[in-house]
Amino acid sequence: MYRFDEKGTPEALIKILEELVDLKDWKPNSSVYGFIEQFKNALKNYLGNDFFVDTFTIKKDEATVFSLYFF
Image 1 (cartoon, rainbow, N blue to C red):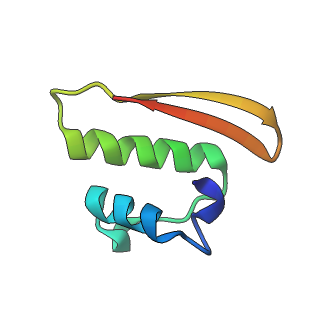
Image 2 (tube, rainbow, N blue to C red):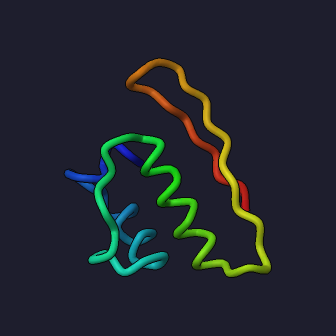
């Protein structure tokens, strides 16, 4: 999802983000890890304190990072 953060954002990702946050508050990230953290925090805020949200990342190379979200 990070590769679409600043440009070419697919409609499906826009719909998810619109559900989680006010898009005017969404800030483009300079790194994939910044995006992962911002998206995780958006999920935490959306779900509330009764739910646990965390991520697991695997870095294949500098340009490829996979992230799983647990909630």
